[in-house]
Image (tube, rainbow, N blue to C red; front, top):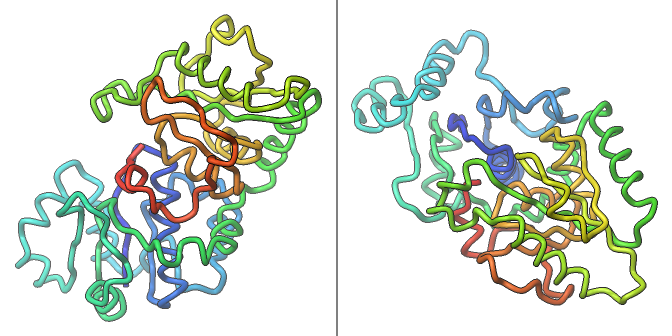
Length: 304
């Protein structure tokens, strides 16, 4: 049994990590619990209905599993994970094992040692760097079914896309990520609006002159209209789920390194380009890539 316990600030982080474990479970058929996904469960058809394609996936420990519930609560505290990692004898006494990000490198879920623990032990996973790159894309259709938005959100998403496509030949999502990006990775991806406007000009030039290109702008902060007055722009609903899936419904996505736009690209099979520096030119359209399995080194360590 594997129990995911890490809480992340980012919506995209939860979606990607949980999906890697579901893909791994689909391949190897061990029991998976995802209680840390609780804050987002109401958004999706699979998690609201507990439908995981007949896989042994549950969202909570069994009601009588008092140890499972207690350990999950401990690991949600600020210091719980660190303390428990330093007390291996306590883990042995309780018949559990806690694993996390001991190294800043991907930990392959296809590792035989991990699979042995997953099938025959009680494994609490409290980290980010766990990946099944081998089977992530293979089980993409299953993941898209599980994480399809429920009807009340899907209707709003479809309305946003329909409205913004009325006067456009091409709809380009622009992810303007701010907030915690001021400090994350030393502020390397905290771009000003002039950087995004420059990228939008580059993008517009990739199409024939007569093409009606509309930019659908997404941000976790207010977007000053005057900074993008030179372009045909639209907005979504400013709801985290509806924005994410409206982004997935665009024709192209540009923005800084982010798991949020990675998931949008994966779900919608939408070509994506990440700006890794503020002066980076937007490439030819053929160089945009649909995110599938996190092969790119810079994507592997992204926690945003």
